[in-house]
Length: 88
Image 1 (tube, rainbow, N blue to C red):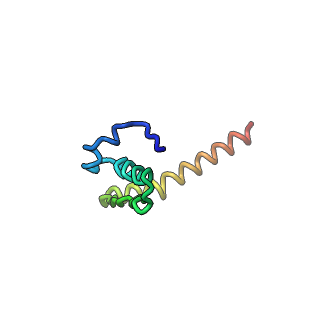
Image 2: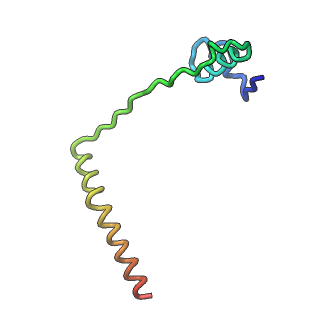
Image 3: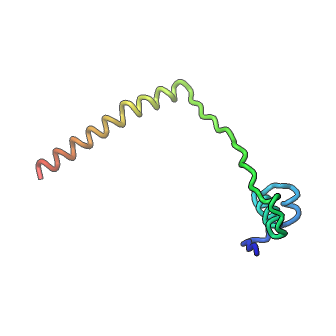
């Protein structure tokens, strides 16, 4: 028995179009139900490439922020905490 929470993924239109990841699930579930184990498999996901690019100004600003501003803030916060605890 295969139980699915929604019948929308089992419509012919979606299965034929192959628009949903559920189409593979439905077809493989049917193959499993008829005990045709040769057809039961999950195809690999298509990997999409996500490029990340910065302009020269953005790169320099990020470098200044990561190398300069964040460490200074951490040191200042530590110094203030030390001073407050010492006085208390």
